[in-house]
Image 1 (cartoon, rainbow, N blue to C red):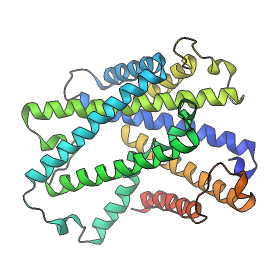
Image 2 (cartoon, rainbow, N blue to C red; image 1 turned 90 degrees about the horizontal axis):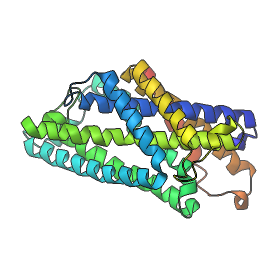
Image 3 (cartoon, rainbow, N blue to C red; image 1 turned 135 degrees about the vertical axis):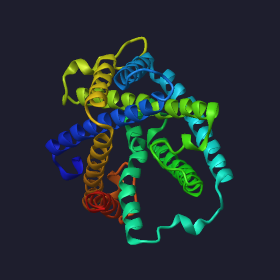
Image 4 (spheres, helix red, strand yellow; image 1 turned 60 degrees about the horizontal axis):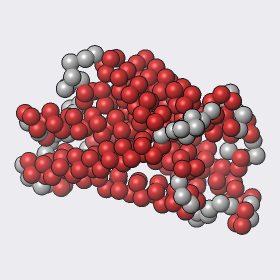
Length: 313
């Protein structure tokens, strides 16, 4: 928010981002538990506690170890989505693409409202900037990583969504509905692991955010303590895990998703407007990167539109 020349606004935005990441991680944990509960006979609270505590401890082991595991799970997740898409198209009674488009105003209202919820699937890519210290040539690689991840994920989301609609699968777990018997249990296990991967990533990002804020003296100094062996901010990671666990247990899933989306979109609006102001007040040579002048206002307007879509859909 330094684009507005206000340190206080920057601090408030950082605090809002902290809350958004924590709520997003809690939402992901709750979603993963909904899959795990179909396989393990434990209460949702017990499963959530085991999941969050386990990933918090893993995040303390080191960035390289955590990132390697996250990447491996990510590959498994992509394979799972590819298999589900293939099965969905195979089991579809027909490939009537026209049937995928709403035929009434109410149907389009559902699409507009659903777009707000679907935005949750894209939360987290922007958090990659918090790991810039661990990247090589971050000014060049981080933007490519964010854009590349969004493009690949969008294509996967479109493919699996089309397969589910054509196969006429709905309910709370439509992907599991594509399979039967032991295959359904296997896919539930893969799905829970893939979703849970987001918990690990968000805890790492939240810990790094706490660490960075502590270095800037926006949070207590003890949060910037780094373990000399693992090179991870242990206290910041423990705090991140505790906040995620508390939110996961205390707040219902739907409220978590809605709040995380609204808060993140609000942050996006502020960031886009700050970038737009920088474009109009600073010479090009003083900027770390450059985008077309029309991008920030259009992005801000799109974020506002999604917020209103949820309110009036």
